Image (cartoon, rainbow, N blue to C red; front, side, top):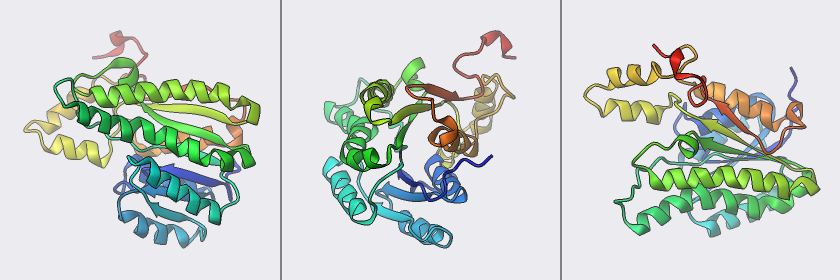
Length: 262
């Protein structure tokens, strides 16, 4: 199926994660479809990704940006507007489940909100004129924590709840410009960061097994590639009448009957 993403300009926040992360996988999936990825991330590895991408997508760009600082986002968008006349898609992907709890300081909570929620708002706010020109669309990467809770992560949970609220609000707000907005909700995905966390545990292998047993479909975690594949569909013209939706890519983790579990 041709997703018709060739030459589409796609801005991805948090796209310079380590190899195999969701952001990295999305960026290179875009390149495979012939789209033009623009990466906003604070990590310098983005420069290496830019070089790799430009082998096949010469206009791919990386703009080093601390996404917790709205003025850096604004500055990067100004640079983007000098290179591109419009943007076709925004994928708000940046996020850190940072463990900011009720016992954390207020400053830590605010910092979590800045990265995990305000960055989404600032990115869309400053790129909106470019998005309007191309009648583009927005995909927000969400988390099951927003709908199930997790414990010990008030900042992240509040942020991801806000992301879902913004998804519906923007879907309504931007209909007049023929701009769609959806959210892709992830539960348990085997990313390098997830594996790094498991490696800190004495019983990491057992912990992984206990988590996977709670995932109804095939008792396994979602791969970053499966998330990227769904993202490609949702931002494409093949999903042209889908807006304001929360799409769960989670093997049935959130919604299916617990009686399915072993």
